[in-house]
Image (cartoon, rainbow, N blue to C red; front, side, top):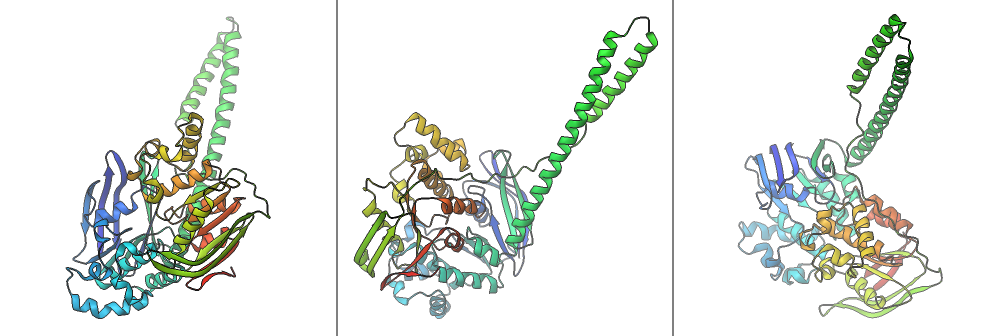
Length: 501
C-alpha cells in the first residue's frame, strides 16, 4: 500500500537516513524508534511532502491511498478556533463526518460540549484526542501518528492500544510509551546515529518491540564478546611473535663473523618472522559493534528527613480559565515520598502541580526543581541552552553543565544552539540535566518521560527510582508509575484520593 525506495534524508551535511527501502501493507503496525533528533518525525513529514528543512531523495509510492496524519501539536493559527470549526470548517464530505461524529466522541470519551470550546483552552490530552478525532472522521486508508500517546490519560491510552490492535489499516507511528509499543507494534524501524553522529544506520524487522530489543541486546553482547576475544588472541600472537623477533635480532647482533652459516639461518628465520608479522597485520578482526550510546543519567546523593513535611495543601476549588476543575483538594507529602497524580484529561493535573510549585518555589529549607508539561512556560525566557542550564555564567558551573549535557548525548552544536531549534525530546533532556545540575531535593515533574526515547526512558526511570529526595509528579506512563512511584493519587471533580498501586 505504501512503498519507499532508496529514501535518503539529509539536513545540511548530516544524513538522518540513507537508502531506506520499506513496504507497508494492510495490518502492519510499524513503530519508528530512535533517540531524539534522529529523524523520526522528519521521515513522516518527508513521506507526506511536508518537510521543507531537509534534502530528500528517492521514490515514494502511495498507490492512490489517502493518508491521515496526526501531528505532535496543533498549528498555532488553529488554536483560536472552536473545536467544531477545527473539525469541520472548509471540510469535504461534511454530512458523512457529522453522522460519525458522535460515534467517535463516545469512543474517545469526549462530551459533545467540547465542540464549543476554543482549542487553546483544552488540556494537552484533550488536544491529542481532538486530533485523533479529526483523522478518524476523515476515513483515511493509512494512518501516520506522531506521538499519539502524549498527555493521554490511562483510560484513553488503553483505548488507543485496542484501536491499534483492531485496526486493519496500515499504521506508522512514533511513540515513547514502551507499554503501547510492546502491545501493538508488529514491525520496527530503528533509526540510529553512529560514529559520534557523523553517520546513520537503520534497521527494519518484522517483529514485536520486546523481541526486537531483546534480540538487539543479545546480538550486541555476543558481537562484543567475540570482538574482545579475537582482539585478545590477536594481541597474544603479536606479543609472542615480537618476543621471538627480538630474540632472533639479539642473536643476529651477537653471532660471530666466523659463523656465516648460522648468520644465514638467522636472516632466513627473521625473513619468515616478518612475513608472519605482515600476515598478522592483515588479519580481519570482528569489530566491537558501533551502536548509538544511551544516556548516562544519575542524581547526586540527596538527603531529606523521613519526617519532614514537604507540603500540606488544602484547596476548596481548583480553577483554571474561570472553570472549576476539582473541589476539596487535600494533599500531604512527607519525607522522600515518590507520588504520582493521575486522572482524566482536562481534570486539572497540570494546574494542580503548578499550584504546588507556586507554594514551594520560594521555600528556603528545600530546593525545588520543576519540569512543566509545556516546556516553553519556562524556556521562553531563555535564548540559548546554556543560558537556561547555567544562567550564572560561572566557568566551573558551565563546565559541569556541559559534562551533564554530554551525558545526555547532546552534541556541542546542540549545547550552543538556540532553544527554539531543538526537538521536544532534547528539551526534555535539558530539563532533566538542569535538575541534576541544581541538585534539587524536591522534584515537581509533569510527564517527565513523555518526549524521551523508549531506549533512554529505562535509564531515566532507574535514576528517578533511586532519587533519595521527594518526587511529586503527574504521569500516564505506566512503566514510570510501576517502577518509580510509591503512592498514587487520583484527581477527579470530587477531589484528590489516594488509591492502591
